[in-house]
Image (cartoon, rainbow, N blue to C red; front, top):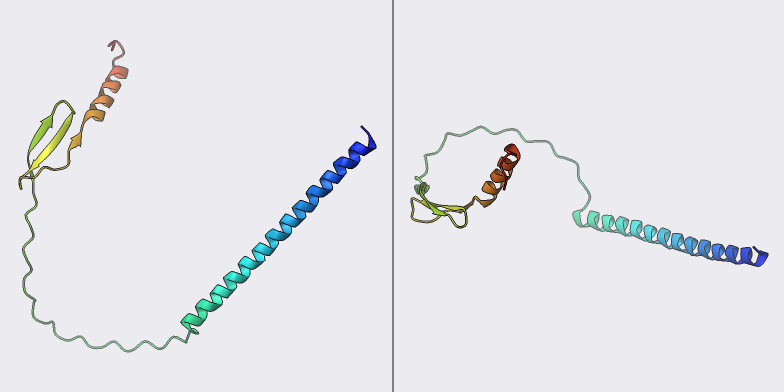
Length: 130
């Protein structure tokens, strides 16, 4: 390797060092601006609220008066529907509850349950073949 080769490498490293110093300088300036902005925002917020005053003394607890008359009764609650039957969908492995108010409830998907059962059965009974 020649001297010229090393001089080129040194020059490239000096350029990189200069770039890094410039980037570091910019980051420092950015951090400084960020800190100043935060301090300025804090000052603005303090001026909006005003200075914090001294806490006053707590007042004496008053005497309780007699309990007033009971208010009118509210509306009775709606009857909670109960499950009266299930609609079975064998093709989709799905149960859908029929409620006492005539509406259908949220369906219960059973396919993944049976799928897991069959996989566990295959592991528990290895003599069975699929």
